[in-house]
Amino acid sequence: MSSESLLDLAKSRVPADRERLLLAIVDLCDTPHAGEAMKAEPIQALLSSIFMSLVVEAERDIRKRLAEKLATADWAPPALVNVLALDDIEIARPIIADSPLLRDVDLVRLLVEATIEHQIEIARRPKISQNVVSAILHQAEPAVLTALAGNPTAELSPRDMAELVEMSRQIAALRTPLSRHPRLTSELAERLYLWVGQALRRSLADRFRLDSDALDRVMAAAVAEAHAGVPRDSQSMVVLARDGEREEMERRLIDKLHAAGQLRPGYLVRALREGRLTLFITALSMLGRFEVDHIRRAIDSDRPELLGLACAAVGIDRSVFPTILELVRELNDGMPGGGAESARRASGAFAPVTPTVAGAAFRQAAKSL
Image 1 (cartoon, rainbow, N blue to C red):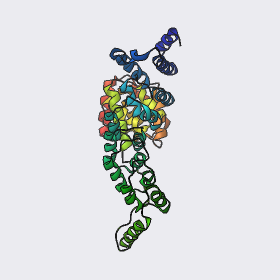
Image 2: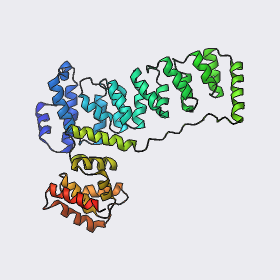
Image 3: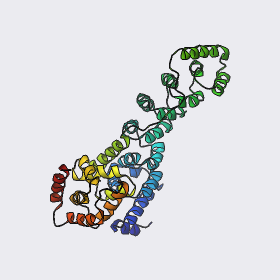
């Protein structure tokens, strides 16, 4: 793309043009002649500012393409890479899997901040270090541990392997990948033998030349104890997401965007179009410095004018509000209620009051809900 074309795209406020500009800049930076120049501190600061301002309001498909393009780039701004790593899992997956810019501290932070799906991708990442492995073992999420057990390139120490084998006593899904793991020792194989199925027993016995008869006698004794009242090992694994984990991840994402000065009113529409009502609530409360509970009460009420006041307070244009109200109702079982007439009245929240007055009015009204 010529410099003139890039300049035209930069001047345009049309969302499609800005997204084309975003991808064009990636292609420009990723050319062979760009080389080490892209890693210079002044250029990194400029790239970070450009990318963050463009990506915040980009559509989901564009962010997915961007993540795929930047997955292996060593010149990409680290702040952008970390934001993409916290995005929806389909967007975050290539970044988590391949980005050379994600350091151990970033991966450990993701294990704390992100969803189970993100954590599983971290556990699958090639050659994760001992520090990351330790964080995964400490959290002890069954699905994440299973992904770790199936990652032969992870830096698992003998102690880590022993811990995983012990965990497989309760987490059945760990047993098959552990039985095939290159770091499994004959000593650990004997322990694993006691609680795997017949097919895996044969596999372990063949691989490590175990004394199957002796191990079967030990196992028979264990079964007898179980019938005598000792609780049996669990034979299934139920993966349940932690309560509120997605909401917490979204809150952290909004905090990052706000701290970078990139959280803008247009982000609200993007969140709703992607069906992410909790992200919309979190972003609106951050933009307007409202209490999250007040936003939730407003959208659950029969007074759409309250949502109008909140939107007016953060700079949403009157012409955009009907779209926001429609999207919120689609995602919130028809609430806020009141029908078409109340929606028409809600537009009165946008004039002639200032955003400051609208914000004050919203806070006052929300307290009475």
